[in-house]
Image 1 (cartoon, rainbow, N blue to C red):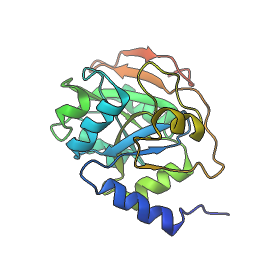
Image 2 (image 1 turned 90 degrees about the vertical axis):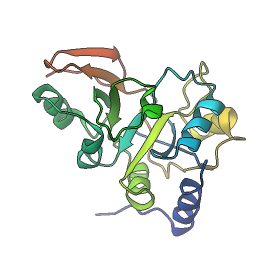
Image 3 (image 1 turned 180 degrees about the vertical axis):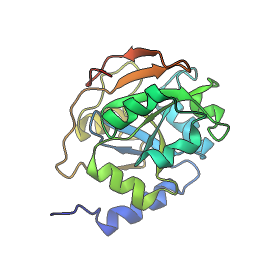
Image 4 (image 1 turned 45 degrees about the vertical axis):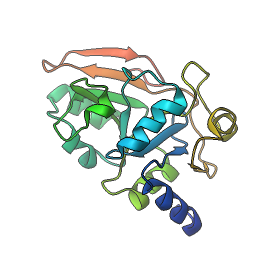
Length: 203
């Protein structure tokens, strides 16, 4: 079976950007294109808010390559959350759960919850595994707030091309061109759909 690997030249560029104090990258996912940085790089997080013109009361979410990498940033995962994670991730569902003390307030806009997702997109997962300690990025959509969502590289270049330090190619792995479904899971197991996206939740 063919195994995708990011070219060495791209790995080197991505590593250089993400280790820079304010380094941010744009990338494809299985839903829409995203913008992200290392989770503990506050300077880069602030820069994302600035170039997106994103209100500070709107949190970023964490994208990881597998659930084990995301668990340390979550306070608890109840039975309902476990069912949703096992059924829909990797995939186009963002799960909102109570955050742990490890999750910085500047990622979650001071809220006591954090959004997590595992994209089903091979080049992006390869990026996380090869270029990011802990295999997680703090992310948001790759567009100026209020503008249409970016569904291809040209959209990103048009909206943010002068501000992003690196744009990952999709290498022919296309996106759904629909945002993820965002589901909040309360401690008692009740769920609330905060945004209906590419997936209908059914558990």
